[in-house]
Length: 317
Length: 255
Image (cartoon, rainbow over all chains, first blue to last red; front, top):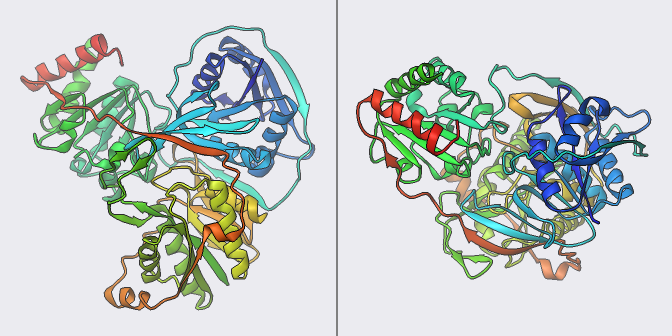
């Protein structure tokens, strides 16, 4: 039986939420799912991982190496793990860290690599991913004994599939090089949550007119358990930091619900959010292009509609 | 100091892409320098300007039309260019990296290599890693800040939710640029005219003696179905938001 490996990405001693969707995709592929963990807290995570189908959790270690400081050693350790445990497909989340670790692992394995995939077929060894800024979907065929694949967050639902899990500590030898070292991690300035993992997003465009006005989106977001985003125009005007930008040169997101407030609906913005399940557009201009490519439209002033929506959500609890 | 910038000639992100056949597209569209590569060009050119010495060389794997992209980046201040010709818009990232590596090595070798963190057409996000692996150099991508310290460079890369990693890398190294690194300049007419006279050294990918392992093959391209017109919700603001909440909860089940 083939074995699929999943890089168990963690931040702040928690498994990244979208990892569970990746595990479910791997489990649905038919093979056994082996998790690879590099932060040393296997006992803490084992129940969560067993619940969604991880049969073996490999806790990778390397002598004298702090993986959090060495991205290259992390990638190489993951590669060694994949080889030692006979993995035929190595998956992870296409997050900034996930992409970096998977790419370094793929280089060490001399394996084919596809990042930001929306689908993967373990029988045909194909993946589907965006080309031309979301305007086309490409099917790529991967050859060789092993391929590496990063999955766009929220592409797969996490499904419960309880199994018995075995923890296997595994020490690998990797070069302890100082060619690339992470010297510090600076926390975000903003208290806003990460966009890419969000299941609901409410975004503001240039008509927001100031960073202060984003408060009305924050208030609505609290009721929706949503994360606030922004268009490039709003970011370039200085109303929001770049970390909040959705689109071609910002974050690629795939939430269940995307509410665009005062967005025109540019091709570049849609490149970053068109795989959302439901898109709602709020704009005063009835001819705005966004109304031609959304699911629901509200022709109205966001400064009236958004607070009214917040109030309605409050009322309904 | 010799800095190489790898640049891809790509369809403008605003261009309408028409898929033709199984895995091709109508190439009669406007092409530009890959926007992420422009951040790399700007960083390389401004570093050489600041140091008042050094050379910036652009390297491109592309068709003959890519000469226009090379002229555009030379107008931004790149000194000269190397064009590795292929008709394939999506050569695999492994053969691309091998070609870039050979061209850079044969040209004299790099002190630094910049490129975009990804192209906007293939969106592969891996050429920086493949080139670094070919050259045996350290690599970091998604760079939003850069400072040069001689034997090492310090860079920042954005990770989850706006947090940043501060990274020190030994030179030479490969760096993948992201938005936020700088504001690429718009060349003025004299710079555009001057760029027309700058050297573009051409070679054919097929003549470079490289083997393509073909690890990852583009099997098909399909256009993404756009949504059709939105269902416009009507009534007073209060009625509209009430019906929206009802739809999202009961019909779409997304909240």
